[in-house]
Image (cartoon, rainbow, N blue to C red):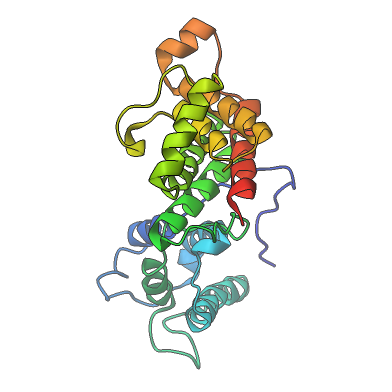
Length: 273
């Protein structure tokens, strides 16, 4: 009986996006995108197993959100899984999905995956409901999800730098919500409290992360503990510059990634009403 290859619980699963599965289909079954695919047979067993394995690694948040589309994809995949069992006993041709559609099952799967996104926030990403700009909110949620995926994959530099950029974007958003008079007062407070040596120049969009942290702290958008964590994220994010890495003899590690991701969580907590 055919079984999926077993995996140890501690083994990291590769992250696959729908477009990669589509590309694999086009490579293994070149007649499918042309609409001329013939029936599948036992000789296709290895190719079908490879496709099923790849689709199995697509994160849930990238799968169809519409229940009908999800059911249709499941029907196509299960048709292929059933064929694998049949092929162990006899050469059983598969040219459509019985009692469901006359479309070739792999073409059916391909069409659905083509409509799936390659980027979407994970179900565990912070909601960020305090941000009313939907495009900004979803973009930040995707970045948070990507940073967490990078951490899970041992990509310390990517996780550290991306998490730092999310902290920067969140603090910029918070500062942009302040009234002009409150912002002016906060800048003066940040300088008088030695959080900044000189006032930031130009509009907030041109400031540095150090300035965002100091002014957000003076505005009481974030508390002192969160400001300290955000400053850690700032220092670690700057390790993207090779000269700084050489000068300080530091590199991004799991610790720097965790610190930067912790800064996101703390900033979000402070900004959430």
